[in-house]
Length: 588
Ligand code: ATP
Ligand code: MG
Image (cartoon, rainbow, N blue to C red):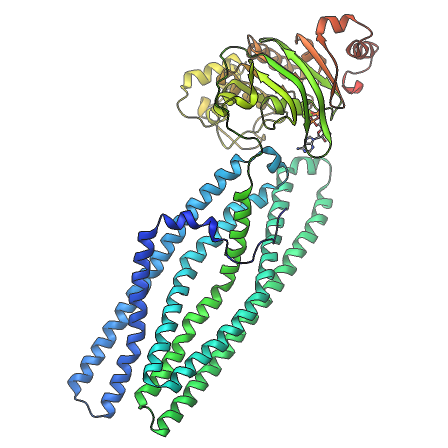
């Protein structure tokens, strides 16, 4: 898992395209901010005129006019600050939504290889948590930083215009403040980044354990899991406290500095007035401006952790976007219609360093059914994954219907090759959604026909709302046999040229088994099939057998021939079975 890696600096490259699309909104936000800051700077000047005017004995009408302008300017400044916050928020959220969508799309496009190496929890943290932090940075921080910079610049210029000592006082105070904040911030960044990493780890842990709850219960591993949970929680707790302490140091230091600033302004102001260098109004102006520094700088330091989160988040999003699928999707050829021939030509494959398949060569004629047998870990599922192109072979060539698989366009491949995996996933949705995989435009008739064809007609009749009955996610609401049947119906609806079936290795009761067998017969009629078989009954229906051992083909031939030959590996297995051993115990 990648945690607190690139937290240095904001990785703005990720954001550039999203920002470029909103130039107009940015210009508007900037205009509102500039107007608001202008007013904020002008208001104390009005106060100065009022004080000096009243001391100099100006007429009441003029003073009243200043007061009215003062009040109206205050009101307009408020409206402008609300408008700036609104614009910042809407820019932030629209950027975040686009970013989230793109990140989700990108994650979905990555290979299974990537997904098997990262927990869903940390991906959620990235697509949701990190994007959220970025949105906050826009909605709050960007507006405040721009206003604060303008306000500071304005205060410098205006105080210098009044008196050079007042100007230097403000500049020196800001420099001390900024220096202190800069040093403290560096301390907090890495701590915050580590905190985010720990929270990702915690989410990943919870997600993984919850999705495996059945296995955990069945194995009585609950206490063990809870024990493992504790160090993860402890790490998160410790890192959170560490990060919080560092952030509070920033906060307390800034409060102390501001109190000192007010004292300095009072002292310098009084001294200048007593020397007769400035009027009382100017001294008041200095104190007001000094106090004005407080709000933006406090808000900015308060937001510092958001920026740190956003910086870390942007860094991680950059890494995520840099991940590329290793299976290129450039093919443009379409697979022919009807059953498809499968050819493996000296195919090698490795997941990492260890070779999993070596020199696999076989040909399966169109419409023939192949049973894949072999010990657990011998590479059966891997062959299935290569035919469905979840991975690309490291060597050799695979052709479907005489078209090299690397040249086939993705949509054509997905509609011509149906895969039924060992454990079928159901989705939160209706029976219809689960059979069509949420594809719209499939007529209800076709869905009912597919379910009936697959032998689920009676089951369907028993449902109160027919194909619009809702199913829960996971496999809780259907038995694993029924879930398999739903998967067969999915494949049936697709009308594929090849069906790949990774048979569930768990035992299914004989009645369901018979329904499944009949459904399978109908699905496989006039289609090529590769069946990873765990049961003798299944093997009984195939035309050919291919036996794998340690990633190599040790036997391939017609089932009848292999069965008749007692010297074949399969013949040996059959013999052992006949002698009273259970098929499974032979460990195919
Ligand atoms: P089973 O009968 O248990 O389903 P199988 O014959 O289907 O076994 P495969 O899943 O093809 O076996 O695995 C073949 C080898 O590849 C195994 O040694 C396994 O550890 C390894 N392997 C499988 N998937 C991955 C992966 N994603 N990353 C790395 N190695 C893997
Ligand atoms: Mg397998």
